[in-house]
Image (cartoon, rainbow, N blue to C red; front, side, top):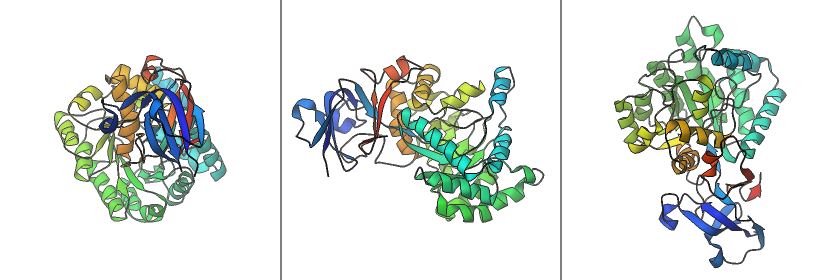
Length: 388
């Protein structure tokens, strides 16, 4: 295998404080050496061993690749008119999901995969090196399975979200749909997915329905996560902790009991700044969560209705400006936080042994991700040591 040195890094964020000190393990004038897709050496350039090949980073900053732990990239169509209506004063209810369901059901596999590939390229160009992909816009056994099959060709972090909303044809008998998701649909989907998710909120599924579906998913070998408390406060966060969900996502409406439960659990609070930005909803108070000791992730929530963005730098900037995180905390949430939300230890950091996934910023410091909102600062995205 060839050892490749990335040298002359002006500022290197490793997220490895045990090795390099400081909250984020930041090194100046650093070198990173990769081999076989992994990090094999990190340290000051002056101490770097010889390598077979070298790339001069030119004094720019390098950060771990962003980990997008919540995305919905398998869909057809768009909902621009719905967005315009919200900007004119209509409130977000989640009802527009059914519009995307109709478009997705009508689309061919080729159209769905081409759209996913387009979004994957956008994610990579914004520094994302690992992304999760949910189903949830088919809501029939066949359509959910094909969404998962398409997603699994592009990421190993595939999530079965048959319980996104009640399928239109089951509108008058929602429990029958819950039973379908927890049995026949799950049985067909489980072989193609790693995770199971439920949208537990007003207008979607209640806590008892979510418990039934997630418990069935766990019994089938899938790992649970949950959409929790986006539109209103429910007991979804408490359920997430009860079932040891890897993440409770959105967390817009929380009380102190929810915060305390998250802080004492292994469940990550995944915050989705693009959703609040695009729906004009209140932002969750990330500062309170962070100070309480809750593990926080930031993700794009890329979807055509409530957060049509693939830009993690944008989400970082919004989290700093509107959710009261510091630039360092927001970067941690978009890297290590996302890795924790996917229960991964090989990504989100750049210690020896980690995957060689990182982004080179066209800037001298990671602070510029929030300092220069709306500017594409991603110079290169490296996945397993190779340019994406």
